[in-house]
Picture 1 (tube, helix red, strand yellow):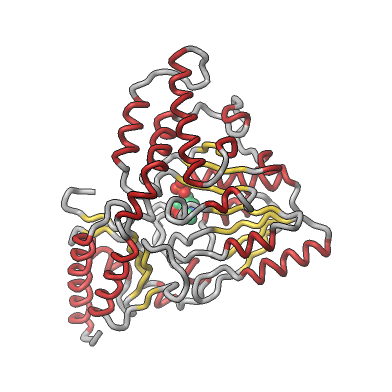
Picture 2 (cartoon, rainbow, N blue to C red; picture 1 turned 30 degrees about the vertical axis):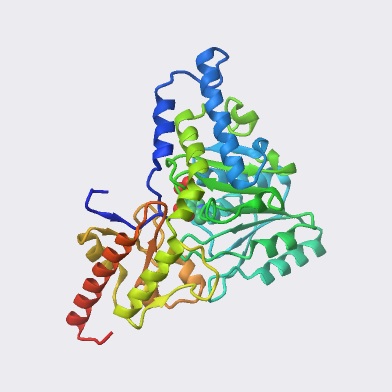
Length: 384
Ligand code: PLP
């Protein structure tokens, strides 16, 4: 990110919070291995345990339930691949709107994968989960149900409480990918129903390359990397004390910083302004409850690759939808699952704000958006 560029892509990765940076620098300056018993090792161990408490607090989990992993993708894989094996499930249930990390992990189990759809507002069809559970109950089988809390592309908040009730009283297991809701929504539920919950450092102003799996009860047996028995045998590999300390400091600072930025109001201003410039604007998931920081929108006929490039040239960084597939440009599987036609999905862009966003950022975005839409109209001779 250059100094003049405006960053509007927090769902891809939030800028590092100063609190996280300070904690990381302090940890990087300390030598040692956190498993060593001498004072250097113990100092790093203390940093890790402080961070464990900070992540537990933000998620509503117990400290002992927090297992640090190398990313949320790793936590998800531990939950699904490791969980399926340890918990003896017969099949995995996923929604079509899951992040690729979930879809690929489900595939990697080698077990049957039962896919449930999204409705046109982007909500997981909980009734389809109910039918999958009813069938499994009749067959005496146990399922691992994997859903996300907030969609990374649309910001739609999923009916996780309803899904918890469906899975809860039965012998099935629930995994929640809470990456995009962590710190933004109340995660109290993490202490209640899900057996496993994944969260990520870099979506809350911590560093990338650190995540956590929150585990409860029998799910504590889910394993992916045995290694040297770190994380109480739940995830091998010498811990990155700096990444963990940064994650912990971000977990402590993020929620108040995020709420102070008043991103819901900024997103409303952005959507109203875009509609004034392009009355045919489509906002995906608009009718559902959305976490306030995201807008996934399209101007019919204006290809997202053209618009995102045009905005980039004006110093405005927005995304084509999901940034998680290493720069891959392709139709969004989330929008396809919502029944969005491919020609409209090719026009979808994502604006995602966060702790560092300001009114000036949104005003600059709206000026850039107006310019890009105006250029498109004059080229194609279309009104609106
Ligand atoms: N799940 C969701 C919903 C995400 O948005 C992302 C990242 O974009 C991930 C999982 C993966 O997180 P990480 O980058 O920490 O592996």
